[in-house]
Image 1 (cartoon, rainbow, N blue to C red):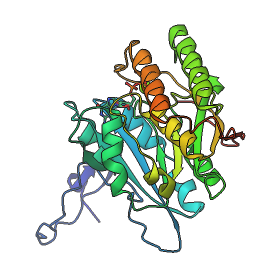
Image 2 (tube, rainbow, N blue to C red):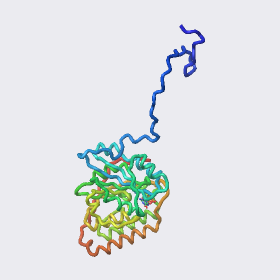
Image 3 (cartoon, rainbow, N blue to C red):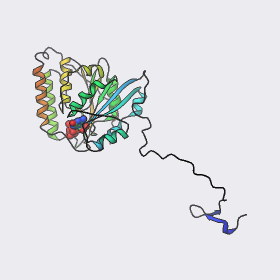
Length: 299
Ligand SMILES: Nc1nc2c(ncn2[C@@H]2O[C@H](COP(=O)(O)OP(=O)(O)OP(=O)(O)O)[C@@H](O)[C@H]2O)c(=O)[nH]1
Ligand SMILES: [Mg+2]
């Protein structure tokens, strides 16, 4: 029986018996916890040749906040359940903020471009792609990573290129200025007319590709005319484009695009069309439209 003086305070202030004093136990070496625990299922670690493979490409220039949002929203479980082995690649344009560090910490592989501009980054990376499918989207949180599985699901022999159309989908309040909205429509109309191939949103930054036809494109874009270049090359080669409606969100972080880029994009389309001679006139329009069933989650 313990003496009253042997009592000691338990947490919460209750009184109990003093713990018996025993031999001193040497401290057990406990390894320090990692500061940034790796994601539960690391990206790019699934190497089952029976699975279909996918590269997710994220061009970025100083998008430390946007890239975190995009990477966290990639539906990894759904992709795995649908049988895709995938890897995520940051195509970095020489960011001076924490973009590369954030992307690495969240499991993406980092590629640093040697040239300048979004188009250069993409063109530099395409020859390195070994996966069957590719999805390209911006790193500023404007395009919905949640629909990646649906976009890849639509890719196949009869549908080698899929584009996410904002203008056939929805644009959240404040996501696109009126000037940009009008500009995008005008550029899409101009592109459709020049290449005799309808397209509703030629400047969309969300695309899916079967890798082989993508590698066959003669892309020349260096900057923001990349999407117009992708469209023009598909139209010239008779590669069909499937449109799916997507939601477009307000950007995270500072914009890099200026209004005069619209003129550059129009000139790039014209140059490509003139350079292609009469090849386009004989082609049948190559565009189909399909809906998406993915639930777009709100941020
Ligand atoms: N690798 C690379 N990526 C770039 C470069 N310039 C822009 N980007 C990225 O390309 C994507 C599209 O650029 P944005 O600035 O969002 O252009 P936008 O979507 O047309 O227009 P806003 O969102 O309104 O600014 C973003 O993820 C950018 O970070 C570059 O020089 N190199
Ligand atoms: Mg953007």
